[in-house]
Image (cartoon, rainbow, N blue to C red; front, top):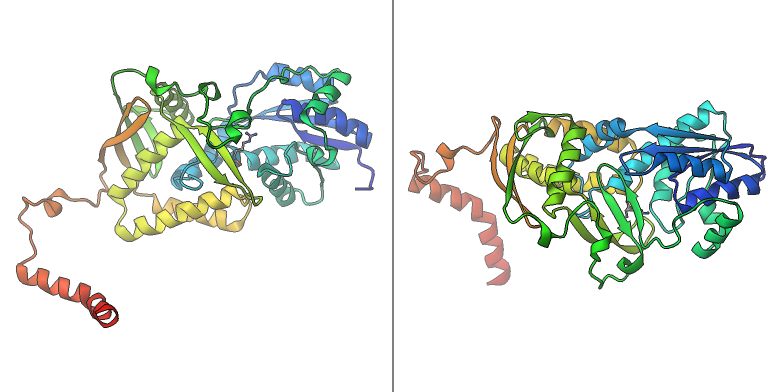
Length: 399
Ligand code: ARG
């Protein structure tokens, strides 16, 4: 990194690390720093964040509202793929990173910057996800990762911030939080001991199930081609449905995740999440898929769902196979249309009903009361043929 760098565009969340990074980059590279904050639905005071950027020395600040794009280009395909990393985590952070990277690159190009920067550490996944976006979309731009370079402890960062006159309110922050429309990730502090139950103060989107309503609530989610289009019979945009379900399911104490996670970098971490809408939608949709996909479609999709989640978690959003898989997922879910009735009660969810014009299930065929029954002879023939090689090989080897 010896070439002179004169203009850096920084992915700036407004937290301690990226605030300190503004002043640090300016000093270290004698360069101009432009900050970009991408609104993906995190509940933040964006005015304050902007003010902090200027106080830390940014020459220009951008706030990009990318909520709609996040829902349409990232969450929609994640829903089609029932995306849950290691069966647990709906990938909120992992899905937002490529989008934030894309916005940073757009602004870097517009501003004629010669470098982009991010505030991810060398132990985490986000460095890979950001840099994947930078490399795919602007291979010519240099990448700077200040947190990997400066070697400051949190205490030293706070001191540095004070010295530079950067206003911070983070000294007593207990957790490291990353939030967007799809999920809230909570790390650090008491959570780093996997034996500790997550304290109540880790949660913001979900109530303690003990104080959830004493009566269950039934909701009806309507899907079309694998994506929700209505709630309780009322058509809404996908973003409205997500916001509404975060509210409703969260109110019933549903949506908490406590997960021992395998990171991209070869280490494990204890991750806690809140994702009431994501889990409600994915659980309902998985159920509907069991009604409308045939056995082979269902088996193939289950495997590909896991594969899709691995890809996106692992920072491979910009791999062609992700794009190709999305097309296949669209094909596989084109009949995932129908209604799912869900019961929420004290931290739990149960699917209690499902229906679809494309149901493969047919009561007239499956019912024990129906007219159609294979004859005794048909059943014997089927069972003989079905079991033939099993019976032969088992008897040869083990009897
Ligand atoms: N483990 C999750 C992921 O890699 C979440 C990371 C959240 N980051 C944070 N600063 N809390 O996607």
